[in-house]
Length: 292
Length: 161
Figure 1 (cartoon, one colour):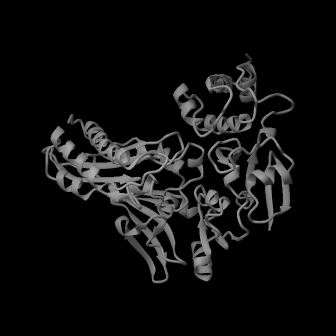
Figure 2 (cartoon, helix red, strand yellow):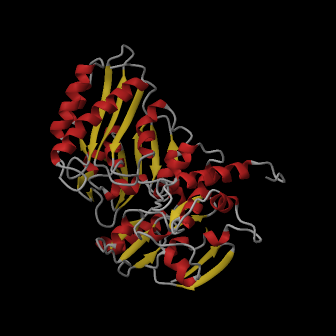
Figure 3 (cartoon, one colour):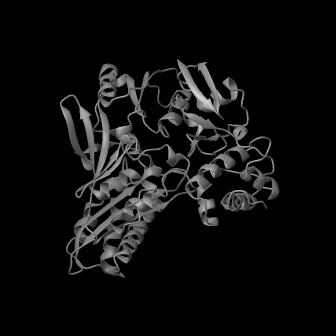
């Protein structure tokens, strides 16, 4: 189908984009990669009156790394992340894994990380990755720029903390030390499909081999991606072991509250959530040289 | 709105509605019907074209307005001076197509793939083409075609088969 008619604007500065969004409020949508929005418009699931195309804002296309934080700009493509020079480093293995299974390789050349967070599909990939990584979304609003922790950003299915007239400028992922590794585990029916179930895991070890911190999150397990707090608490301070992984896996099973659909039943998806957290933890530990 | 898109080196200036999708701009405004429309919602890859020389995009899920000021390569632009591009020759030699509907998308996705990975492994090719669906050949010959093209393109300039 052809989308409903809309007005199109292509600002050349962030100020101009923000002014357009302020002017049109709820009528406007930001167009970044468009790989979710345009199909939704074609199905007439979305009918924005105005599209504010931010693809000319080249300063939002950067992946910027400091000692503390990796900033993914609002129009940095999934494929930019996939091909980043640092993507092979162990500390980025969660983002590495996810960057290779988001949608398909062609969609990734347009699709963006930040757009995916803003779309907040219940079965999206980057939302779970952002939770496990404890990322922050940089939002420009009327009171200036603010940083919203991902837990507060993801409000409900297809709903975020971004209000009408506001825009996301980027997402910030904390830079971990080298005793950190992660894993992204996804079951999908075919390449390019949304997850039937998926688990994002990020663990950091202390010098003595105990777990300093853990991030565990699920996709396709509720209204939007969810953090498995219980698993994170169980893991912190402990030494990796088979029993510990089993306990974290059980916590994921309990936390998962999926909907049955053509991809699977509630029982099947809950089962997968547990299995995928276990697999993710085993792989993350293995990447850190620990067999558990 | 007025858009100015360079397609296969030719400048096209057209007045279009903002909702005009690039696939339909190419087919109906530029009369370049080599770009096919399959699923029409970014799943099948029939409509893939290359933007600005290196980026493969699904033209059913991009507005013509987004291509304003950019260069687009379609299947009609692959051959030069009547000589098939090595990818096209590969698909010919290896029987990489049957009905041919997916072929333009396969060619353009492979074109961008080889720009980023000139020496792809078989796994790289299969992964790179995983967003393009073919319902006839079962992919084996498509992979062989891309391998042949990579080998041809990797030869030093002036070398012949």
